[in-house]
Image 1 (cartoon, rainbow, N blue to C red):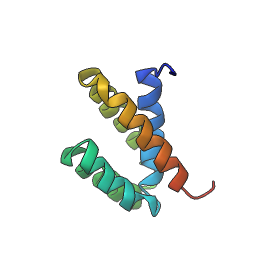
Image 2 (cartoon, helix red, strand yellow):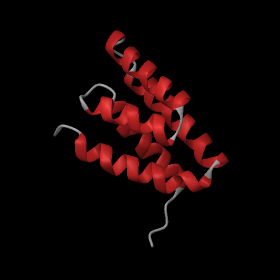
Image 3 (cartoon, one colour):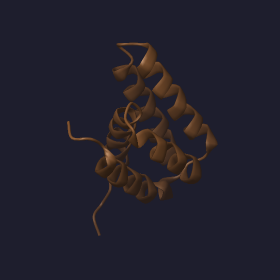
Image 4 (cartoon, rainbow, N blue to C red):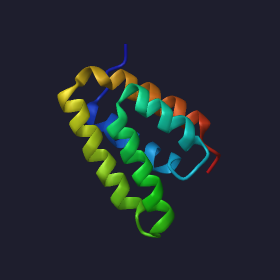
Amino acid sequence: MAVLHPRRVAWEGARIFVFAASTDAYWWLSDTVGHYLGLMYQLQLCETRLRLQAEDDALYAEAGAWRARLDELLDTHPDATSILTQLITETSSRLPSR
């Protein structure tokens, strides 16, 4: 079994969530985040999508905000690491090639 470093998982999740927020993968991710992480995270993902559409320079601020959210999530619920890792993997597979 691989050891998952929570800070690395949070950073990778933030990066993937923000990238996915401006693609068609958003719709799948939004539903899945709501189901596994809760409605507040789903709402925050929606807000991220709206900010990315409205502001040209929102990318880094949103990535930082998501890293902080996911760090906090993993600090308070370490058992969420495997679910978050699965979300990252599945979302990555749904993203368009860069």
